[in-house]
Image (cartoon, rainbow, N blue to C red; front, side):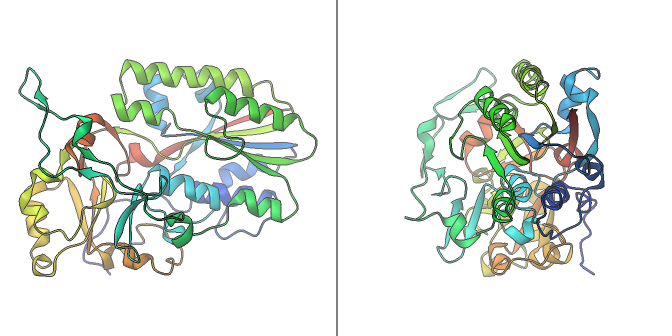
Length: 396
């Protein structure tokens, strides 16, 4: 039994991994985890097309804040289920794309420490972690005296390697590839996969065109909103409201006219309004660190210098109080924080001496500019971050 008990994790028997395994079962692929009964009762029916549309960060709390109960999304809400931990795009979309828990695939967050390179790498962008330039200063102050930081304060990360670091050190096989290898038909419609549709309507138009083609098929579609808008403006801004309502309108316009198609609309995680700190403002904590934190601002992966390891929990608590739950590496593994699967070979070395889990509305960034620009966040241990919808539309 570990010394520290986590209050509540996402339900790993009722999460995105189980949805992915339901899709695999539907298309005759060998599963690696239990399926999702909530989805199975629809997938057991015979439809020519199965579409999973993921709208980034459109958690249950976001639907309830912005959309009417009789609108397209909420009127088709089949139920709630969970993301994974951390509830963040890198970990969660990867789990939906490959049917594995984060401890199995290893893509835990935006930045990952890669021991072979001794670098923090931004996996999706394949660059070294961006940091703040040494000696950077704020460019101005607002009327309330708050410091304002400019983009020139950031040292952008250079290319991490002349190969893709994530796919080299943490390779996996996607559900789409598994279905195709098993003799089925499966496709992507997302900005990062051919033919690279770059706006939401183009993504839905590709889905429409694929559904009109003969034969049974699976289509995985992804769009990065409302996450992008909420990061910049928070969860209750006018901009967020306009974005969420527009997504609902456009989605209904395109998907309601599809024939013989089962449509599952979901999210990778939810979103919350964050009070942001910058770790550079806490020199007592910084002096303990071997390198900058990785993973996410609400799940901090911390490597500690040997001389501070014993005292670090006290130092961290002195500076951040009870805003975070601090776990040792062993406690992370014993509590199965990143999933109940068999932990991936090498992943233990990518987990720091301590991992800090956000249990409040506070996030810790490594640059002042990011802390300034991102009032909305996710990747912590609050229900609004990990409870997500399963919206089901059955088109005969």
